[in-house]
Length: 34
Image 1: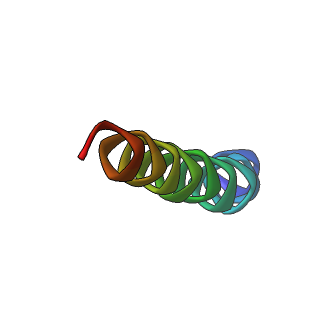
Image 2 (image 1 turned 180 degrees about the vertical axis):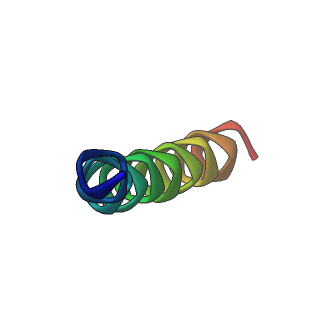
């Protein structure tokens, strides 16, 4: 159980960071397209 909590504690911030960076990247691309 503790291992799963530690894994979630590591994976969630990384996944969130990737999602935010992807959204920012798409936003920049759309700005260039317009």
